[in-house]
Amino acid sequence: MSVTSVNPANHSTNEYYLTRQSQMESNVRSYPRKLPLAIAKALGCWVTDVEGTEYLDCLAGAGTLALGHNHPAVVQSIQDTLASGLPLHTLDLTTPLKDAFTEALLSHMPGGQEEYCLQFCGPTGADGTEAAIKLAKTYTGRSSVISFSGGYHGMTHGSLAMTGNLSAKNAVNGLMPGVQFMPYPHEYRCPLGIGGEAGVDALTYYFENFIEDVESGVTKPAAVILEAIQGEGGVVTAPIKWLKKIREVTEKHNIVLILDEVQAGFARSGKMFAFEHAGIEPDVIVMSKAVGGGLPLAVLAIKRKFDAWQPAGHTGTFRGNQLAMGTGLVVLKTIKEQNLAQNAQERGEFLQAELKKLAVEFPCIGNVRGRGLMIGIEIVDERQEKDRLGAYPADSQLAAAVQAACFDNKLLLEKGGRGGTVIRLLCPLIITQEECVEVIARFKKAVAEALVAVRGA
Picture: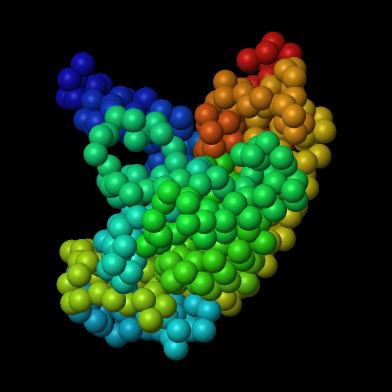
């Protein structure tokens, strides 16, 4: 069927637009395959498709929309910026708006402007991680990087090399060399097969010994990059003692510690940044998604001693996105004025508590985890034998059916983790208690329906 042969009378259907999308766009598109709708409008935590159906959105642009869709203050910021006469594109030339945004963002860094400076990158988190690694190599004169299994840092050559998931890597040869992966602690599936505090202690010791062992076989790296809460990896939260040890060891050996806060940052975890739960100070913080208030922007916060760039050492045409700085400024102000970190914490605690109750009713919910409004629900096959730590095998077929049933129940969410077996909630920070109750009701119904569809019971 050609693009022009679709019946114009069907313009009001999702099928019409999805068919046209499949005809005009590459096979690389992913979300429409799992969430088959065409969006007509959205507000807050709600999305309306072209057929007039409303959905409760717990995806929120993969965590980008901290204030939900079309927040009045964000819309007003865009209108004000357009009316101000400011250029929309300034490279890295400054403006009064950029100045205000820079000052506001720096105020949220540990030690503030005295400790950190900002670098504006291209508009994606991947470009931010690329810039961070280049800076670490420039500063240290070393070439290798330590990353962690389950981590996600983007899809460009360098960032993909540091990403744990193999599905995208297997098709691409010649990624950035010199990346050494190490195991990341996991409360439900300990990579060492130990589990509990003993597993955390072993991984903490292993990292320190690996860096300091003169027979480890790996030269000292330029950087260690990690997420304090792994997002795409299945909402895996780093233990505090492990993060503290990594900070201690990297500081001792002058290794640049890079915290990727692209998804977990901006109050999603219940604190402004997820690393704050451990009370540490990274050398470089990578920010994107929510930092631009829903518009494309990526920023590094760099401890001043590590700012080893020469002028134009890392550039990007769209690093001067004035609309994104305006909307980002509004997001920062709103998070602070409305104490959205506390809302994320309280709503997240409620959701986790209710989900753990559902796990009693539905044993296919093997593990509920996360912090704040970054929650993972691991779907398992409880009919099979448990492993040595008491965890059931993951059930990717059922997880996919749960996501599909959620969509049928007008609840938008995504999967992640190994084999796509972790249902992920990334609700807007403004979500209300009533909306959280509705999330649980729809999710419960979806799990029951998915069990019938897959297992017949």
